[in-house]
Image 1 (cartoon, rainbow, N blue to C red):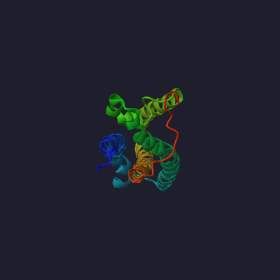
Image 2 (tube, rainbow, N blue to C red; image 1 turned 120 degrees about the horizontal axis):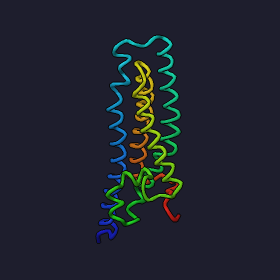
Image 3 (cartoon, rainbow, N blue to C red; image 1 turned 60 degrees about the vertical axis):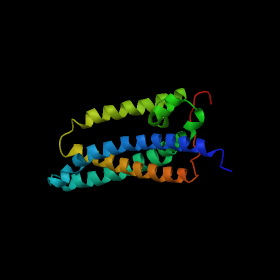
Image 4 (cartoon, rainbow, N blue to C red; image 1 turned 45 degrees about the vertical axis):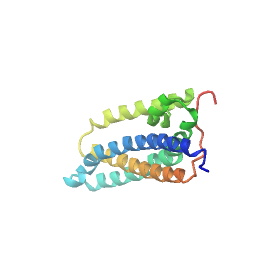
Length: 178
């Protein structure tokens, strides 16, 4: 006899895949856009020894603060947990906007909404400010950002793979009314 849960499992998995894939594509788009700028100081030989030390230090700082603490310890487990919870809500509109749901930009507690949207606006402001930096400093800053984003992408892919195998992260979902 076929498993009665099988038909509902495929849409559930598809919604989770859409949510995490959408988030991953947003991160990947930023990496692709910023990598040439981050590599520019090396390609044009424009770094003094002091600037090279600052570059390396900034990359290390970004790997820890953005990659490890920001992505691996907070953003990724919340994103994957929300992705796998989304199908149980049963709202097609939320499923359509699964990446935004997974990032806590919609259908979340007031605190999560404020935090998530504040981060989005802070990133936009940082992008505007960093674009105004002269060479090679823009490349230095973007080098750290690319390193942190790549760390986040790898952490997201690994956590998602584990979740597909049944090990969904246990993390506060920050759902409204919860």
